[in-house]
Image (cartoon, rainbow over all chains, first blue to last red; front, side, top):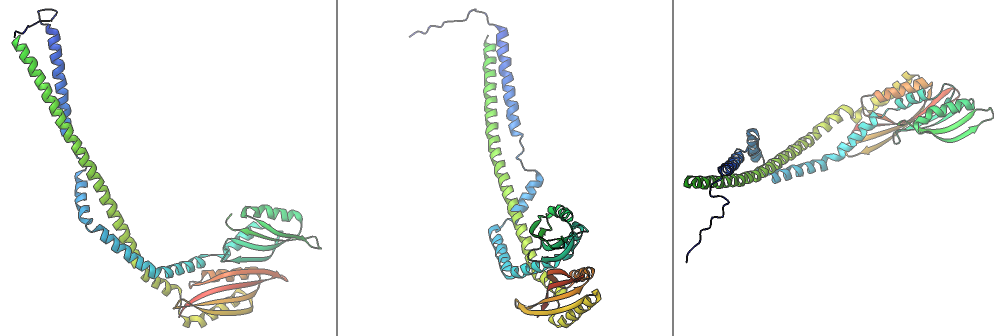
Length: 178
Length: 172
């Protein structure tokens, strides 16, 4: 069998410009690939020397982590079971001791107009923010002024009675934390 | 012509070698990425465990210190029941010093827990408003675990009548 060698080039002469152009392009591509390949090798593995050192000590400290955690939790639970009621009791006493009736009285002295007289007052630890009182106002204008001042403290008027002398006897409650 | 052909093959060879080099580099980089991620995860996990351990140890130390703190609290704030007569005399003295007139005084003594004695005092005083306020302030400033439970004031014939409920704790 004989093979036919056909030259299908448009010209018998080699186009040197095109040849060198392709060569340069291919070499350029090779350089880019080698450069990128080198870049891949030149890669930090993410942890700094300090972190690596820390990691070694953390690994050392992490030995028997679940057992140690469990032991701590059990000890805490036991201590809580034993001492928590006493801690709660002490905290209740401290919060009761910290409560100030004087502050409630001071607030009331500032909030009530001079023309309105306090007749009764009740303050209790169990409802520490609530002040229940009865006041006496000589005229309706004084009463309205008192309402206006006390309205910042969630004022509730429970009864308002006008006596035979024309004075207003009012039972009301207010909260010290508006 | 032969030289040019050789040069062409050589360039293609270099290109293939470069592609291979790039590929190997890429695979190594991916492996390193994965290893780095694993290390970071392990590092974070170790840190988290370490912090949990520290927190638990701190909490444990705090709870271990509770009995001592409670003992100090009791020693400082809760007097022995032997001090009750002194406490009562002190209350009487405070009342008279405030310029108030005692109207009635009742006690209730109840054991609380195994080691405490609660004394609830109910008393009424009569006098000027300023004196009542001074007396209440005196009770609030007292160092011992004595506090007012409720204060009821009402005005009668120009004087204030104050009903106090007070609680005090003593060690049994």
